[in-house]
Length: 108
Image 1 (cartoon, one colour):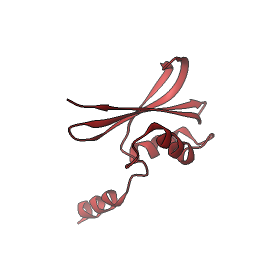
Image 2: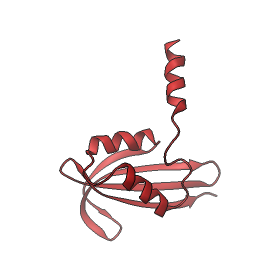
Image 3: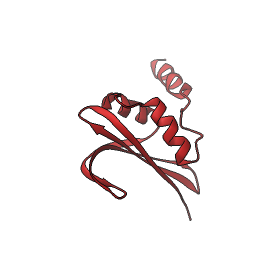
Image 4: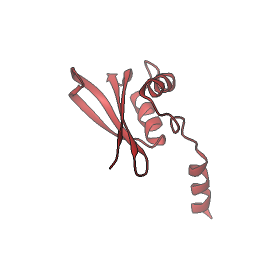
């Protein structure tokens, strides 16, 4: 019975970011959900609840920027052709400073 209750609770969660298909909208939604000053642990919990796999990056590159500390989060949506999301939640200390997003389609 306990397993059924836990499954019901987890399956009821609708992803805030689940139907987004472009990086501009994803950036706006994430900046709203994780505004400047959000604790990094809260940001990680939110992203993992949204289905992202996250790992910390220290003194790393993102695009043409370098020496950034960020939480790197990625997720792929779809089946044959997948939308691959890459999100950098740049932090300073223990707090969100900036959200950067890229996406592309991956498939055969």
